[in-house]
Length: 119
Image 1 (cartoon, rainbow, N blue to C red):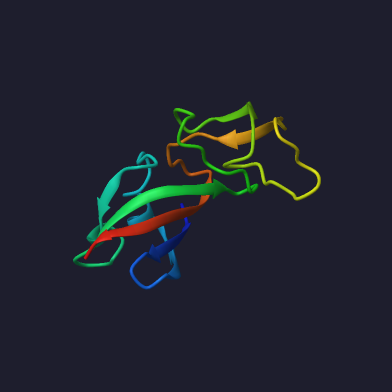
Image 2 (image 1 turned 60 degrees about the vertical axis):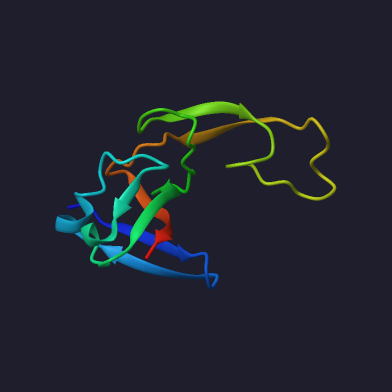
């Protein structure tokens, strides 16, 4: 049984809502990638198109669009997805090796971030 927490953002009014989906609905999302546009009727929202923008797994590791598949990998990265910039501690050229998740949704993913593309 796979359970996902969906965070759906509406860029027109700047709001976001959180929805939890269970097994019959969540199985439609497995195998989708960051950047894919899906129909809202797959998750119970009629008449909208949703774009997958990211997410995180059960341990809190973020998904990266440039890592292929549903794997965990250590990458060397600068400030951006997965690495916060902290004022006073991160200097120009600061890079760090961090563990991130790939761009494909697998049963290990906990949270999926989406944005409404068209209504």
